[in-house]
Length: 155
Image 1 (cartoon, rainbow, N blue to C red):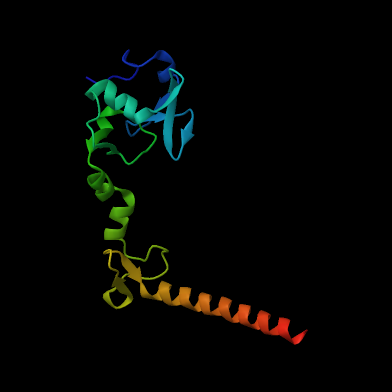
Image 2 (image 1 turned 90 degrees about the vertical axis):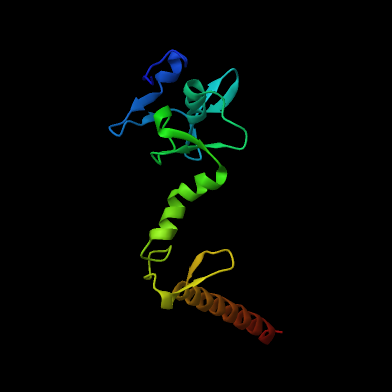
C-alpha cells in the first residue's frame, strides 16, 4: 500500500512534498525542466523515479516513467507507470493536442481539410501560418536588398 510519509524514503524527502487535492504529491523544492530533484549521497535524483523505484522496484531498461496525472512535479507512485519512450510520447500533452485540436498550433486558424497539409513526418501544417511565414520572409529579404542598394548609392 502506498502511504504518504512512508519510511522507504528519508524524512527530509517528505518535508519537501505537499499533497494536492488531485492526490498528486507535488515536489516543492529544487526543480529543473519541470521535474523535481532530490539530493542524496551527493547526487541529484529525479523525485518521480525515486518514488517509483521505492514502491515498484527498479525501472526496467528501455522504459521511462510516465506521469498518468500529467503533472511532472508529482511523485505519487500510483500516478506513475513505466512505459516505452514511444508510448510516453504518444500519451503526452502535445501529442493529444495535435490529434484533437480544432485550431493550428498557434491558435490562429481553424483546422480544416482545406487549410491543412500533412508533411512527410505525419505532422499537420497550417497553410495560413505557412503563407504568413513566407510573407514575413519575403519582407525581410526585400528590406535587406534595399539596404544593400542604398549602401551602393553612397559609393
